[in-house]
Image 1 (tube, one colour):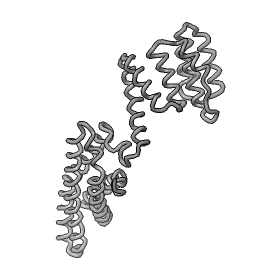
Image 2: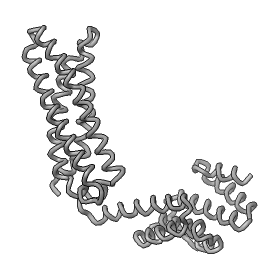
Image 3: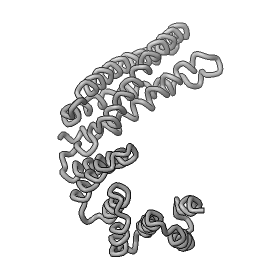
Image 4: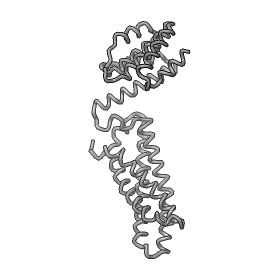
Length: 277
C-alpha cells in the first residue's frame, strides 16, 4: 500500500479541526466584537482546504482493504463521496477567503465576501461532519483499515484476537456459553504463549464450562511474569471466583483481603470483597 495511505487517519483530523474552527471564526468575525478573528479564519480555512486535498488523496490510496470487507463497500463509497464534496467546498471557501484578503481595503466588498464565506461555511461544516461520521462508522463498526493498512500478518492477527475477545465476552453476557468457550479456545490457539490469554482461557473454563475445580488446578499450576503484577491480581480474583463456585466463600474473602493488602491500588478488589459480605 502506498505510504501516503498511512497518513489518512492523521490528516482527516486536521481537516475536521481546522475546517470547523475556521468556519466558526469566520462567523464570529461578522460581529463587531469578533473582528479579531478575521485573519485567523482565513488561515484556518486555507489550511483546511489543503489538508482536505491530502485527505482525499490518502483516502483513495487506503480504501482498498476496507472496501473488501463484507458489507463495508457502501459505507466506504459514501465516506469517499462526502470527503470529495467536503474537499470541493473547502477549496471554494478558501478561494473566497483569499479573494476577500486581496480586497481587504474595500471594506464593503470584504464584508460581503465574509458573509458569503460564512454562508458557504455552514454546508461545508455539515459535509465535514458527515464525512467524519461515516469514517468513524467505517472504523468502529466495520474495522475498516484496522489491522489491514500495512498488509502485515501480525496486524491482522491482532485484529482477529480483538474480534475473538470481544465476541466471546458478548456471547457470555448473552448466555451463549458454548459459543463463548469455542471462541476463547480459538483465541488461545492464536496466542498460545500469552499469559493474559491463558487467564482468559481459565476464566472460560470456570464460567463457560462450569469446571471450577479444573480452573483452580490450572490457576495453581500457572506461573506469571514477575514484572506484571496486575496479572497476579487477575489470577487471584479468578481463584476467589473458583472458591465461591465451590461454596468456599470464607476462603475467597481471605484470599481477596490478602490480595488487597498486597496490591492496594488494584481496581476491582474492594468491590469483589464487598460482594462477599
